[in-house]
Image 1 (tube, one colour):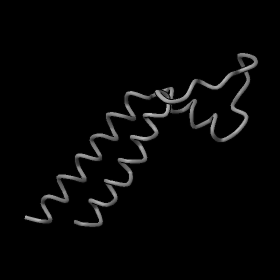
Image 2 (image 1 turned 135 degrees about the vertical axis):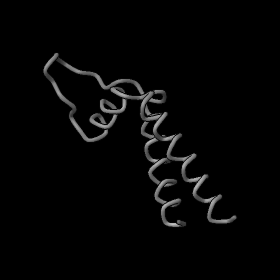
Image 3 (image 1 turned 90 degrees about the horizontal axis):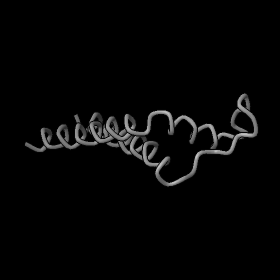
Length: 75
């Protein structure tokens, strides 16, 4: 159970940070409608802008699941 709680915690932190990036950084500049990201960071920003609310919700659910599983192991 402890490994499952750590998995939920780490993945929840990553997904939540992924969901927060659109609120911290601007959308990457595109030269034309068919231009893509020029590096990995721009790709991450573009993907995080597509579903920023869903990434936050899913990350918070994973973080709460880690707290619930951690609490069940201590009881």
